[in-house]
Amino acid sequence: MAEKTTIEWTESTWPVLTGCSRVSEGCRNCYSERLTATRLRNVPAYQGLAILHHGEPRWTGEVRLNEGVLYNPLRWKRPRRIFVSQMSDLFHEKVSNLWLDRMFAVMALAGRHTFQCLTKRAERMRDYCNDPETRRRVGIVMLDLIKEGEFDVPNGMIVPLERCPDSTNEKPAFWSVWPLPNIWMGVSAEDQKTADERIPLLLQTPAAIHWVSYEPALGPVDFTNLSPPNFINAFGHSFGLPSLDWIVVGGESGPEARPFNVQWARDTIAQCKAAGVACFVKQLGANPGQERDTKGDWHSWKLLDRKGGDIEDWPKDLQIREYPQLKQETP
Ligand code: SF4
Image 1 (cartoon, rainbow, N blue to C red):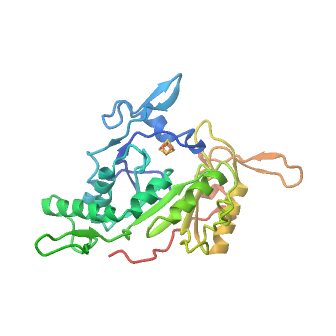
Image 2: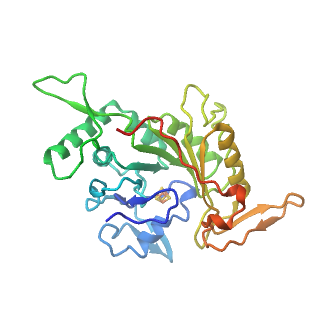
């Protein structure tokens, strides 16, 4: 059974990793950490990965590969968008290259699905995806899985393997197509500082689709002017870097939600529109508002849905939910 989700921009989740640790302000009210420390604390895949300290959830720092769900996407027949590792960070420092290779091999073999990867560890993502050895290792894991024949991978769904340059008839070697056409690579950024740090690294990562989750948005972001003094424009035209393809924007939810200025969403929509880039307004959060134009007073918005996720509840100009166009066809 596929994991159901209420996350608006995806269709299923794949909790292939569990456990994490915080890296920036965007992690302060981490939903996964709270869930792991409370409702899921007695579930084997989550046990001991987070505790309650004076009532507050705290990761213990351990990370696990959840073998029980690793191969699930190969069993899901209907093509769908899948959010990868929503309970952890895919490129956490405790996630080994071997674990990553196994996850990427599953994603490659499940070519009928679209996998949406997201990380706050952008440097590790860039290095892993650019390492020439990665595609060879992923190819080896794919071949092993195909040989084992345990999964029903329909014809035409397998991403073709290519022969490596040093492959011989006696000792054939293969690597996977790279970047994999059914994997979207993304970073989370909550403010200008984290956007400056992570988006340039994302744009140096080979990927079918490059995307940003600007959630929980905690401050304004100018995507056209990143990382001074280099002044990278995330919409392309900077040092030969590709353009972003998609931005998801949203306010924070939960009891401790920090304020979300809906002007940040409006600015993001305008920047995306000017650049011809898809934009998706996910939610306005539990604490949305806007500065009044004249006096500068904060004006809180009252919304019916407690995480501000009901699009019908918003002004028309915020009701934007677009998806990116694939640069290449999925085989
Ligand atoms: S990286 Fe993601 S999963 Fe990990 S602590 Fe931060 S918000 Fe939570």
